[in-house]
Length: 186
Image 1: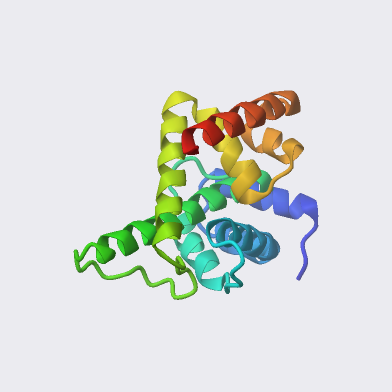
Image 2: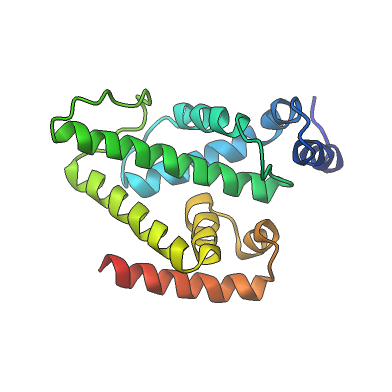
């Protein structure tokens, strides 16, 4: 059964109020969006690779299902939170891969479809994540703009809606964040 935008918006309101079954009701209506976000995440971390995204979407869903506070209030906010969750899953995998490479014996995360191709990609994933964490310490909103625009693929208008700021602010923040990250990663 396909719900209209008003019904989906009401489900997001129910989710924000903490109604437990709202997330399960929302997922079928935004599953394609979650798969798109997962594909974008994986493409960014492993350029040129074609990977199944299902494992990443499902792992992210499990993490989102455990949210207690700061529940998403609309589709844009939900996708931003999902993208952050997916980024953390991929970074956790890269950290475990890096630790295993050094002989720690840590068992890998059970995400068979998410494999970093080589040690250089592991280092790149970790470097980008560390840069984003430093950016978050300097200006958390800039980091959230990067998550929404780069990782989730939201437009400037959708990012503004998700972060509850003006489009103009998002445009300025996007320019500042990109410049800072390029300098930091150079």
